[in-house]
Length: 329
Image 1: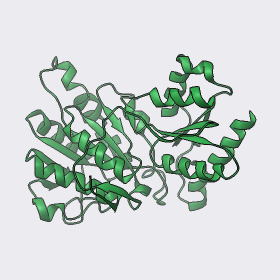
Image 2: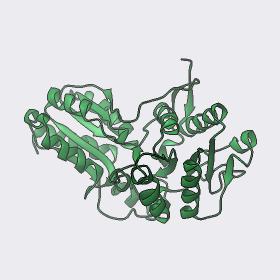
Image 3: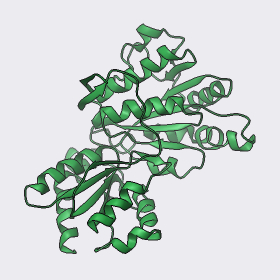
């Protein structure tokens, strides 16, 4: 496949545009996604290409937006919902949790809800406590929802195209700080299967398991640690539901040490589920040290830039935690 370097935001826009060109039932709806181009500029020129019937600017009502998408999906359309900030899904949880996730099961499999809900997530933009949360564990806890957190431009295009194809509702959580990052992305349409974790770096001393933006931070930490003789594996979970434990368990058996890294608060966070699955499975017998979690603090995200950085894992803290793990601290 032909490669070129584009941004994460461009990869999202390209995936949506290609899906809309290939299938007239695909359309997009959300706040300010038309002429304005989206809160983070992701939808860009899609309204010029496809018109207001397929790039539908909506009123400011997340409950109404998701409800309309569920209804459209039930009659054969493939809606892509953009929520301006993942925090605002709180306004639409009834439609997401009690309608989109459950209709297929409550109607005995007679109907499906092929809906994609995209939402910018995470901190780092100075948007404070109501616009900076990491809520992935909310959605991962709900049977009937699939949840993905793409960590790079390549990942987001492939996972988004798979999400659009999927007959089930899929939540796609895109970290805000990743939108301007760049990477190699094929021009062609390609799919990354939902439900497959990805080993992005292989080492022999410990394995870091990460989601979203923490994947790139773990890769950067692994690079710095290699300079002092510490060899680190990195596994990108990328699909939270369904979860593929295979690469994680394989790397635990090879390294004997595992560090679980997420931006979200530690208490009842997604990495607690991975820790539980490790402890319940055969890989636990390969551990040389207890499972280590590196997570955000259990506080709302502050507005002050120095405090915002302090409450979520940063590169120095990840490096320090890896060294502690190797020392048995």
